[in-house]
Amino acid sequence: MVEVVHQVIGDSGDIPNNDQLPLILYKNALEFTTDDPDDEFQKAFDANGWGNGWRDQVIFSYHHYHSQAHEVVGIAKGTATIQFGGPDGPVFEVEAGDAALIPAGVGHCRLDETPGLSVVGAYPPGQSADVKRQGEADGPGIRACVSAVPLPATDPVSGREGPALSLWR
Image (cartoon, rainbow, N blue to C red; front, side, top):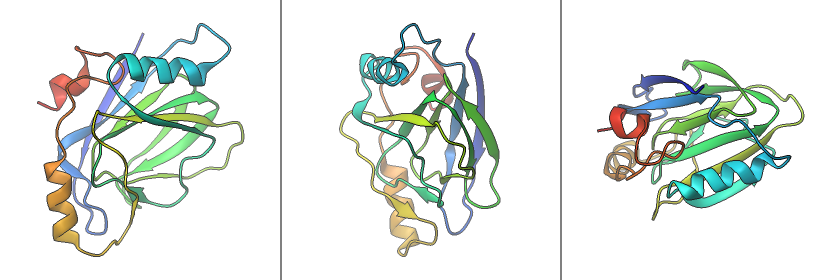
């Protein structure tokens, strides 16, 4: 059963974060039925209208955010400790089957180096990630860009129903 945790993360100064849209963590978002969990996450995101995706073994180990896109990341294999919102933000432990929906502007950083991680990411239609680092210049311009990112039409995990549609409206 999927457990949903959500938290609004306000502006930290060096990272805009998003005081309108909460970070959404889906614990047990997927129960894998094949031996290719990366493919299962990608197909689930695609089926729910989220694409332009990627697969990797890393989440950046420095505080960064995306000013032009919301991002979903699915943990296909392994575990990770991720901090959201900057150096003073909340820390979550994630494991295979979990997913995190990260609103535009919300900082994220992997804190550990546990081997075996495999991650799948995706974005709403028409959005793609720029990578901004903590302390990036043009704070007001970046915050205006973050505020202008359109809301997705679907939840990346649950489709036409789900927390992104209820919590982000």
